[in-house]
Image (cartoon, rainbow, N blue to C red; front, side, top):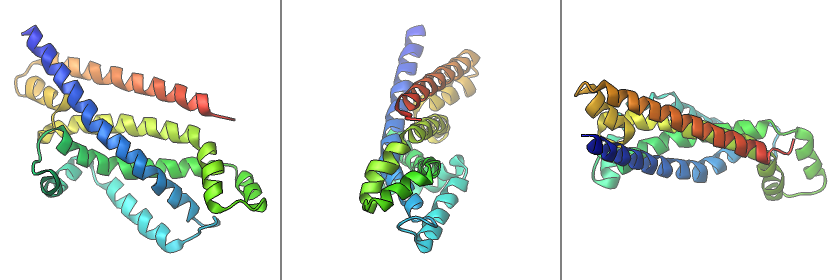
Length: 217
């Protein structure tokens, strides 16, 4: 019995890691450019564009306002169309990705709003192109905030991944539901909670250390 539960926990951990890896990688690849775009098209910036701000901002806010449990259900047809199945960690990663991208994009934008406007104005006065300002000023100056934002995104995604177990997404949440809830094995439920707490603490520790290491202030 003990060996069986150890194997179950190992499988659940791998499934959770897999679905989160997909979601976080795509959140960074898409969320960073989206967050930068939101910032540089805002009022007073070099690519100011009210239309893009309103459209992109509205879409992001709509997605972020949908509870993740509802988002899981809403995206079932899309997941089915893309993967041919709605079960398993890969299927669950689609919902996680859709939730993580706008969440991280907003945090990237917020990180860039914390940059001293004088630094941006100095770069513009020196004749730096917008792309050069983004590459050499915005991204380096916002690195610490972006890492802190990524830490928050990873922790939020970990919580969301546990909910994915409700619709057969696998992972730690699925383990807690199958054994802790349906079979009334409170020890399994307690173990999954402890595991999630340890993972959150570890992620936060690594994120804080990384953000501090690249902070130039």
